Length: 253
Image (cartoon, rainbow, N blue to C red; front, side):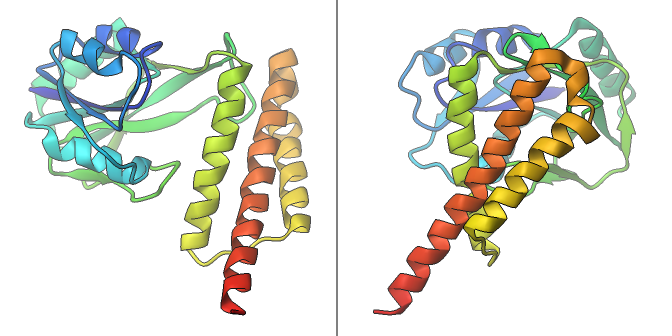
């Protein structure tokens, strides 16, 4: 009755725990965008149906591709670094049994470099992931995509675990990748930026995370998280300003 859909690329370090938490599902659909590690083999060992793509269209389009491959009446969308707790599994099973026309969002508890974050804008963090197939799709955003359900959305009690950043190396990697994707998405929407705007937005991202959203209550990791949020924001606007400059220079010739 349930299809679990996951998109992957080089997730061998995380995918085992993710798949282990949903082995009870009717089917697992994995769309991989060219992993060079053991991700694909691991997924196949768990009995997942794996589709490999040659290009990377962005998070939203890739998740919609995975969604199109699902065949069961209900769909649960997961990221490779997320895990379904036993409590959440029981709650999902009851929902599927009742078969109501509704979509469901669940509270997500996220860790950062080994510490679960309770403030900093990360908690409470509700994500809509469970819905009836054919009654929802993902936005076409290149990054920070969201589910667009057609049924009313209800709230689950049990938590979804999110092991988002294992170490600082992964933090720095995602700062680079997410800022690049964010700049490309902003450019496609006709937005522009300057160095001054990049600096202002970066500073504001730190203030919002650390002070307004009480990141200081998360201790040392709260400060580090606020810095990485500021860096991601700063580089997103800076990269956008450079893209704007490239377009303007091309227009001169």
